[in-house]
Length: 66
Image (tube, rainbow, N blue to C red):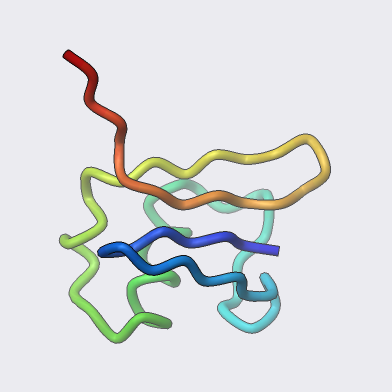
């Protein structure tokens, strides 16, 4: 499962639906997510791809504190 946080929305999408897998680089994962969201991939350049132990992905904006 890929959990995507984008502009205040949360989406859960099957990896197969957006064509991602664990061996892909973060750049490729973000390109596939951008394609799914129908946006330019540079809009996700500051986003983080967290890979969970169970194989899930979480794609979210980088947290800034302070």
